[in-house]
Image 1: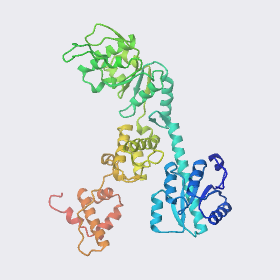
Image 2 (image 1 turned 90 degrees about the vertical axis):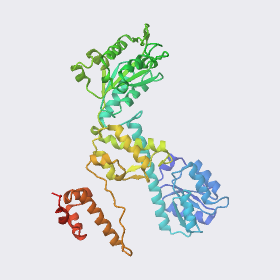
Image 3 (image 1 turned 135 degrees about the vertical axis):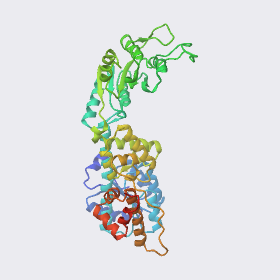
Image 4 (image 1 turned 45 degrees about the vertical axis):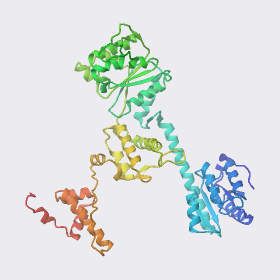
Length: 490
């Protein structure tokens, strides 16, 4: 092979790109070499498929010009071998044996395009330029996404907004201490994720992280769940069982929905925080524990304190440091990042729509994305995650259209999904315009009926101008007046 070893860094200084020519005919190689170098490309040449594969393993190239018929193997086999280790590099096939079958096979096995010999110089150079430009653009986009992910991610927390950056900074500061922390935020904002982040960045990271939703456990079972019990402590207690505090010893205990605790349980929790000890149900012995508590609530505890429903002394013990999580509607600039994160998460889980870097290739159509950006997100990040997971499961192509968004989300944004008539049966011998006209007539009539024959409402449902709808009604001979004047319609 006639080439000197070139690294990625060295190739980067080449203005137009570095190209590997793989062909067993010397005249072809030299002709391509001259053409490309005159155009400002750097080149290397290989006489066989084996030499070409070796060169691609040892050096960096922006593109490969590959002959279909090689002395040691088929160019199609070379494409397959290259693609097993390099999915990005553009490959253009060149052959004197041009056929649709060969073209289809080349594309199926991973070639970017298929050109026949003798080639047209201008067309070949245009193909090369476009392929390299597209490849570099994809690499830049991938690098940008990776940089954004590293810059704005904090564990599984995603955000570039000023509000979330302040949260990340506060978490980093407080994680190193033993201080009790209160996380406040609406449902679905990621309070448990924040608690995980605090734990994983603390000296207790190697210890247990135990989460308990105090609002989801019946009152008569909650104390047993938190503090444990001994055998015979109550009916059904057939054996001694450790509680969450005991299991979290040396680590972090996350108490979600702490505002739902009863006053008696609040008193016991206060003792654990103050004395670092508790007594299991039915026991007479104190148990010493070293537990860091992170509590979370979606309500204002000060209001509960004012109503006498939450102990003031416990509130101050829990609220040494408060972290407020903003609702998603107040950090809309984070929505595209969250969408990308959840797309990749669920594409990995479902093993679909992934590129060679194990990243999702899915995206929302621009109109669908605009709806997501404008949505109020009452369920916050959790609601957005559900929408993205649903899109991954239902997607049939890389672009997710508006129609694939949940009906409830569309209606919340003033959009109703049309019920498309499927029973249109054109007359025998009808032309395409006649079939389309009948379909339009049926659809508009259907939406007029749903709108109570109100043309303004119907135009809104069909998302067309009222003047356009009126023109169609006249052209299709839809009798609005007769329908409105039916008995019982007033």
